[in-house]
Image 1 (cartoon, chains in turn green, brown):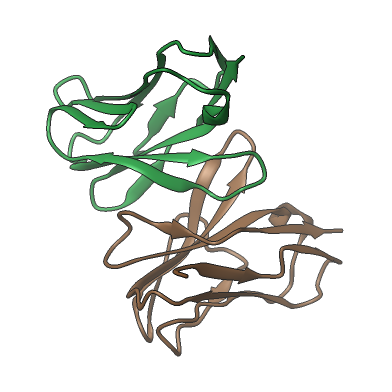
Image 2 (spheres, rainbow over the protein chains, first blue to last red; image 1 turned 120 degrees about the horizontal axis):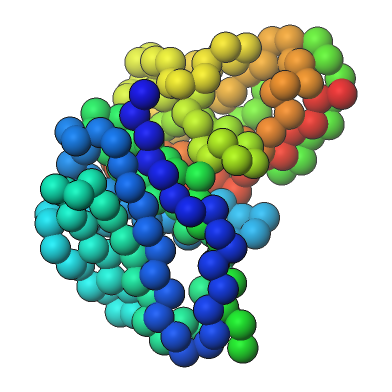
Length: 108
Length: 112
C-alpha cells in the first residue's frame, strides 16, 4: 500500500527559528509533491509544490526533494506564531496520497 | 472571489436518515473530489470526478454516492448514514487531476 509518512508532532519552535518538517513516501513512481497548511478548524491550503530534485524557494518557505531517498521536506525560515498550523505532505504518482500531517507550534 | 462552497458547515443526524452535502465551485474546474478527514488517518479520498458525468471511486467509497450533472456541482450523498461515517468532510477542485487542490470550508458530520 502506497504511504506518505509524517511525524505527527507537535513540533515546537521559538519565534524566529527555522522549522523543519519532514515527509517520506513509499511509491517510487511519485512525481509531484505538495505541502498544504491547515489551520485549526479550517480547510487545507496549498502553500508549496515541487516536481524536481533539489530546492524550491518561495518567500520564507523552501521545499526540498530527494527522490533517491524518497524524502520531502519543508523549511520555514523566521517562523512566526501565525505559522502555527498542521502541515500536510502529499505525493502524487497516479493518485494523490496525503500524510497524516505534522502539527507545528511557533512560540512567541 | 474564487471559491469552493460546501453546505452545511455542521450537520448532526441519526442513523439511516438520508442526507446530502452540497459542493459548488466557481472556477470552472474540471476535477472535483470528496475527502474525509479523521484523526490519525489523515485525508482519505471518497470519490472523484474528472468531468461532467464522469465519476470514480476513491479509497473509501463504501456508503457514499456522488453525481456530477453540472460542471460546478458535486454533491455527496449518504443514503443510510452510520456512526462510522462521523467525520470532517472536504470537497476539493482543481483544473486537472488531483494536483493543486482548492478545498471547501468543510462539513463536520455527526451520525448518532
